[in-house]
Length: 134
Image 1: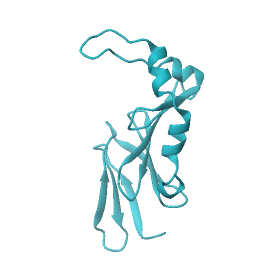
Image 2: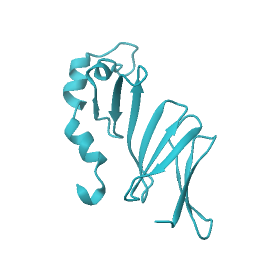
Image 3: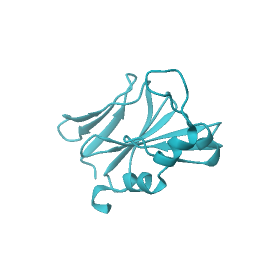
Image 4: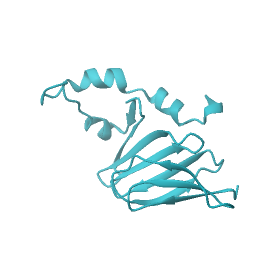
């Protein structure tokens, strides 16, 4: 819309700025390394960022909240999408890489139990919809 500008930084943050005043409107924090790429969604409601940390993140431009993190695995052969609530969806190979630790231990929990509860393609898709589309 020409009213806002988005920038990525070496400190892992992304900032949304007012294009006319130069005022910082919002700081998006979540990446653990420098942000190499930033883009607006076509409707201007989301910001997509890519980082050296190996993740692509989708943000709600209005609230600054993270909508989802995308992991490209094995040179793009497999993938995972994770929402802030822990719901996941991914390629068959990506889902095979999901594990969890039992709280307070170094023991891995049964993958089937985790996926039964959190492999929710429907909720991942819902999270990716703009707020008025839900």
